[in-house]
Amino acid sequence: MLDASIVPLAAILVSTVFAAVSIAWDSDNRATGGMATLFLYTGCWALVDLLTSIETDPQRALLWMRWAHLPPLMIGPGALWVVAQMNPEARVRLERHARIAALGCFGLGIAVAFMPGATQAMLPNAWGGWMPRYGAPSFLVIPLGLVVPLYAAHQAARSPERESLPRVDRVRAWGTRVSIGLSVLLAVPTEYILPLLGIPFPRLGPLGISCACAVVWLTVLHDTEDLMLTPQSVARTLLAKLQDGVVLVRLDGLILSTNARFSEVSGRNERELVDMSLSDLIDAPIEQVCGGVDDRESVLHAQGGKLIPVSLSSSIAHSRTGNAIGVVVVFRDLREVDALRSQILTSGRLAAVGQLAAGIAHEVNNPVAFVRSDLNMLAERIDEIRGRVEQAPGRREDSHLFANARLRVENALEGVARIAEVVVDVREFAHVGGARQGGSHPEDVVEGAMRLARLQRGEDVELTVQPSADVERIEVGQELKQILLAILRLLAEAAQKGSRIDADIHTRDEALVIGISAGPLIVSSSVIRERFESLGSSVLDAEAGELGLTIAGELIAQLGGRLQVDSRGDAGLRVEVSVPQDARGAAS
Image (cartoon, rainbow, N blue to C red; front, side, top):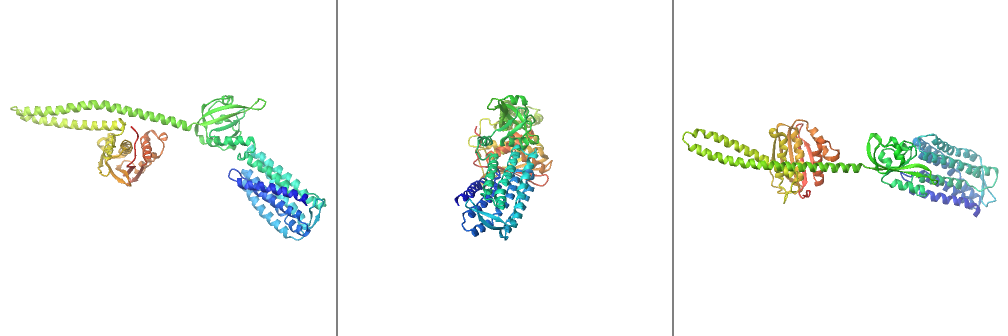
């Protein structure tokens, strides 16, 4: 009895181990669920053989043998399901066929199990087990059980004919085809033909099919680069973890394989990249790349015509005999580096503009101070001369000339005072001397931004601010002024002549809120709202005319604030900027 039970026991062990690992490892990257069903069927088949072989009573052995047809019938749909997983182009069709075949084979196996005469008797053999004597129903079921496995082998054989499939998939399809063929050649004679001829021989069907399934299982997991059983699998796993793209190229420039990172950067899947010429993807002479380069900057042509800056490094791969067999090319994505370069360049330009504005403000401040001093002195001299003229006989009628001159000087002093305020605002906007000690008053911040914005439209647009006593100081006055200036300039540009821009200051939920209402506008308020959407983009992606708005958006995000834009009809708009009262600005 021991000799007869060794074969099914070995089949049960193989099926159990591989089925358990298949279930545990099944995922989107490892389609091993179909393999688990195959091992389940072979395990059940081997279990029936084991229970049959260890029985001493032929009647009880006959009860177990009645189920011997069901697991072999189910192996065919399981094999077809595995082939479907390996054939993406026909997966939907083959999976549907596998489901239909599984229902049919299951029903046929149950029917044969309860059909009288399927197995007529159990005869002892020389191996210590039992040999079945099949009846007429079994003669009909045996050929039907071969239909689905042969169909699965045929579908696997068609895969190599499709050149669109990768070489790995074609090899796996051939392996599946050969495994199914060997399984049929091993199972059918020992399970059916030899018992029909009355030749005693161990039943090797479950063990042979489970071993063949194990070979296919190792191929499936090995090719998914997830089971590190061989040095090649270890190498593919390491390459998949790299942050740089790696491409293996033939000496003539055709791509043999890539890692996942390069596929991600190029926007193409690995199947599309295989057998593609590397010269079609990069702006670099393929001869130099195949000859070996080190950190050569180039451009990668990604899917959809997108150009990606990359750095190339390549080295020639040699065989054990020293012959060149290919070229390993490493691609490093330079988009972040280029973005950093552009950001540094933009920051440098902005700093230069700030220094220039501060220098101009300083140069303008000196003559403004002289002009103001001279005008004050002139005003005093006009009053003095006017007094002398009025005391002179016959000159009283000329005193109105001095009144007009005095009025002109006062108007000039008022204009000079406005120029001085603008100069101070420009100096503060350029961060000369850093933030004020103790912060800034919100009303002063809004008025300073309005004075600078007023330079764009002059007196065509009236800008007013309603004072508020809720907040006396705020530490982020410089940043807030830059935000408000970008918003006010956009609204002043879009405002009609004679329109108003009103600002109000209040608090809400421990935040300083500055509301700006503008109208009527030259264009629709929806158009202005679309321009405000650039506040969420990157400075490097902003258009030249929207740079101020984009910088304002980044400042709002840095301060932890928010911006809300609401339309007031077709010709009106209200913008609210809120920043936390305890926000801290940039260092001096």
